[in-house]
Image (tube, rainbow, N blue to C red; front, side, top):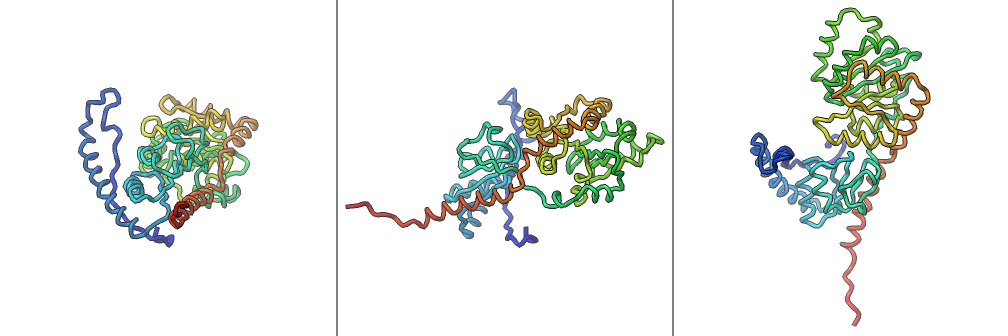
Length: 348
């Protein structure tokens, strides 16, 4: 934040763990999370006190909250001081913080079409989309191909499990890599925590024809824009960053949402799938043969690629950042004008 020329003030905050209560037996408490939840509850209270002190000093006309658990004490403090706030929800399924703060929010900016949300007051919703990283827009396909040493005559598949990687996806890739490189070139972001296993398992397979067409990485940072630019097909989780990048670049996409750890990914994928914008695979049931068959189904059909490309691009909001800023500023202006409006005496 300071590098961007913005003042930064830390506060305490705590994360509520939703598995504190068993879904089927509400009276049975999960003792493994009871202590951490109690501890983080105290941190949240402390954070509210700190946020009150900061807001009183700064005297903002409006507060913008992104939805992480650190936003909870700030939102509560803003509510106590009568300062309006705008929240942004990237996913279809809101987290606990945004669910709580939405009842007091002046406006709720959302990353998917308004009709996708069932738990928010529809009168507060504004569809702005999710902000676009500029490095994603600047990369060119030929630049990406050259960077990774790829052939422009052979289709390129980008496979990613997100910044942390996904062991489930990685295992399927390892089981299908020999078939994939027969026809395609693969850029595989395996995640820093799993790249060692991937490379070790690959070394145990012996000689694989055309293995030079397979490129594995732990994590792609600045290179991700180039990888996306080079890709003819993207395979990944259903996080908003992956979806947003593919939508902006109109990339045919196959999603493998994380059903176990991130329910919001399932809903993200479901919304897009219903509109024909992506193809969705169940990672728990996925086999290497099924994985290859789905990729073949997309890359063997120009019509399918064009259909997916157009459908997902409809979700792109290139002006998301500026539209969100306008919404926040307008909310602040309205609040400021109300504060400055002189009290009118009733006519006698």
